[in-house]
Image (cartoon, rainbow, N blue to C red; front, side, top):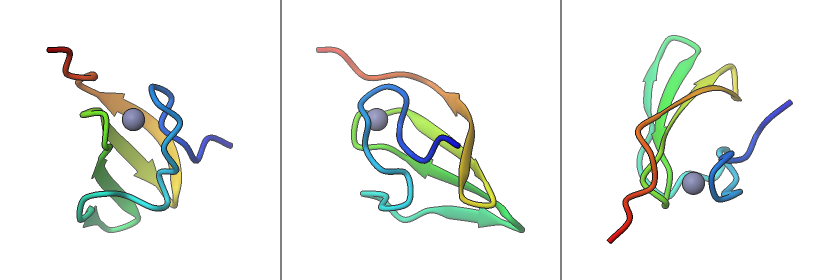
Length: 53
Ligand SMILES: [Zn+2]
């Protein structure tokens, strides 16, 4: 079970930004800039990537 950002290790269950929830799927923006897609609290996909520079 992945509950942390695969990029920086930030706990996805403690998002730094308000989560957008649609049913049991949530979209959370990590502190590193990656979008995390959570399904029932588990990270199932990521989008984007860390902003460098
Ligand atoms: Zn991250």
